[in-house]
Length: 304
Image (cartoon, rainbow, N blue to C red; front, side, top):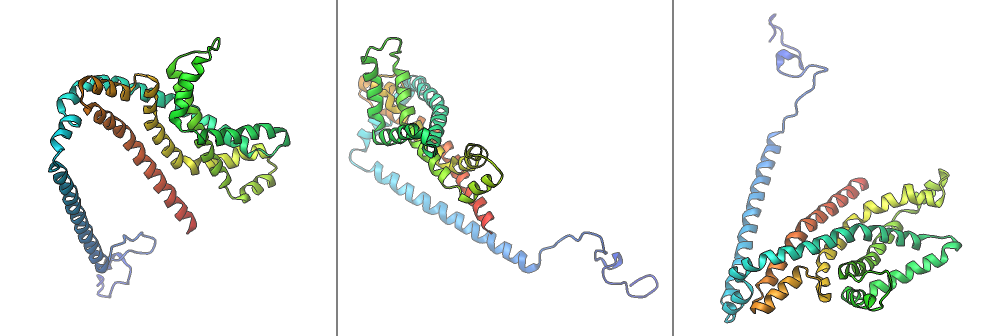
């Protein structure tokens, strides 16, 4: 009621309702509040169920493994804390070789892969030899196992005795990894370029761009964004395959672990090396999953 005794108009300040021009604060209804309570209850119930099932499954597996007749021998051979501590410094030093090789190879592979993919996308008759070389490169190096490339480059090329060419095993192992993964990455880039809708090419031509300009400013930027998740998957594999360089005698983490195991007749060092690679790989794998999820959400948002 107003001071004069007349009822206050609906929406006035005196009635507790927002007046015209004032923003109104949204308040959830009682039904919406009840829905939220139900959702929170279901979420807690699912979390408890998932935790209980996970503990039961992995606890049963651990109990079953420890009850096997050969478990004590396996534990002493592969999971000895004493040998893990003793081998850790040498493995840590060797693992830096693997990390250094990965960090050097990754940018080179990206550049090589993109150049090969662009060569395969060329349409000029003058560039036919280059296109054939690109096709031959991807077909050849995707077909040869990476470990054979490491052996061929590490032992074969220095054996030629070429003047002015280094015989450094680290260099030739790096070349083998770049050649092998460059072929895979080139195909990833090519798939990304070919996934761009033809309307993008038509739009670029309408704007007066040449094929090279369209590729540079329109097609490649979109293709690169699309292929980032599969590229990261390739680099997760590259991280692990740096362990292959141990076959030509490079003193990396695997070679250090194998040397320790052969000397002490204990293979705990191998498990330590595996833990190093897993610790390096998991963050990149989770980052890849996150990027894939974000890309999928963006695509779904664009489809609505």
